[in-house]
Length: 214
Image (cartoon, one colour):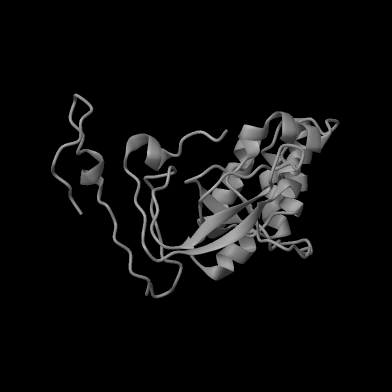
């Protein structure tokens, strides 16, 4: 049984009347590359640690269908993830370098072979080196797909690997607060941001204050 979502548990559910949804599949193929012990059976690890790799309701979902350096295989559903799997600090730094690029040219250079080789030098653990190489060789172009409306697992041994994702609409999410960009240049999408003051409108007795700042 799935755990209560953030919006339901806190009574802060936000929904919009107009919704655009899409069925998406958890990218177990990519998540297998993140497993630390290469000798382990990837499918078994994804199954035994199902909650560590699963997509849960209200999580922000990233599309991983298209690859940078490898060919992108055809799929009936868009491939998505909500986690990077077992943590490699050097990989996180590398992704920050790539996606923190200020121009398209820098983005291309930072995602190239030379930049990956330089980042690999900083990885000390032998098993992490192999994982880092496997992941960056098959690195997907992370694109925001939407917000998960249900639960899906990385392994078909556990349960359904496909769940509905909200592509367009309004929804409570559990990954905030964070900077948000409309994805267009110049930005044309209309966003209604909640400022930081909204995060502080909770009294010391854990009850909500009446004030809401936009």
